Image (cartoon, rainbow, N blue to C red; front, side, top):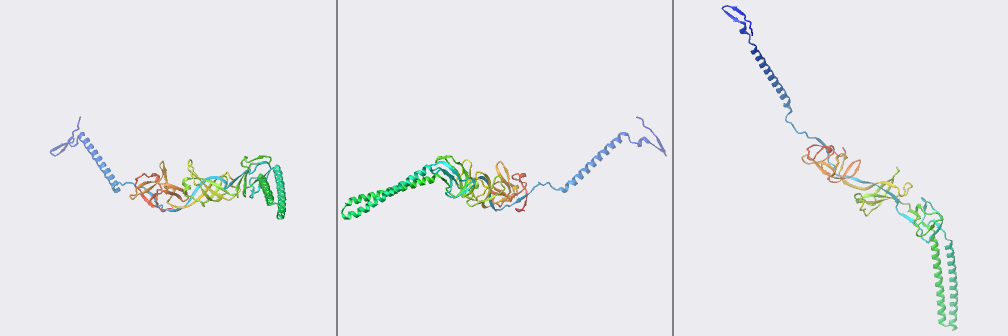
Length: 393
């Protein structure tokens, strides 16, 4: 390595330039040291800046969600039951042959026709029976004649016995003959009345006033007591809905409850009233029948299907918005808040659902703080911040 050497004269001393210039190794060391110092300064500055930004935030706190809660209380709720059933005659009367029967000569009514009590629905041939009745009427006349003769003979005998022409024994025999003749008259009259009654039962008559529903006989048909039902009638035209209802719905239902019935396929509704609640429950279906009385209307056809809304009185129960009620495999439930504002699951049994909300049959007293919304995102034991809202708010 070559170094250039220069001599500077100044008085008595000479200074060499190569003595004033540092060697290359010292220069590199100074650069490295300067770089290290710069890095340290930058690191200190970054740390100081970050520490300064984080300081105002304070200690880290747990996030507590806010939820809306309601205290439902207990409200008077109109009990409304929706059900379906079959329309039928309230008192259906099957009409058949009451007498001996025979060949039907005329049918006088059609389905949908109103008839009076005792009105003839169909006539049965009675040509033979008429002749029999005429013969019995003649027998009555013969018996009356015999009675008249016996009475006359008795009267003459009573006049002669006082004169001694006949004995009292003969008088008694003539009185007995007269009594026997009178008895034969009564027998003949009873036989004639029986025949006439039988003839009167040949015609098929309405047992009571009402509406003819069906007709199952035609002229020329041979009918008898074994022919079955020939006509079906609705007594007084009264109709009813036989509504199938669950055991729980029947439990609080009473006769007199108002109902609204709508036949299938119709937009017209009819007012009715529950007149009978089934005293038994079908063990297979766990259902019973509530019978709703209806006034006659052409739109109410027996055998048809209809829906009904029955107003079964009122009761006091907590009422919740639908958003508060949750359900899973265990059933319906809500979340309530305990004293520490922690979510607690509460199983409930819901009643009817209306526009006002969901009634709770059991599980709530009405004084609890119930989570109204966001219950699906809570877990049991989770702490929340309650925001109380009034019902209906």
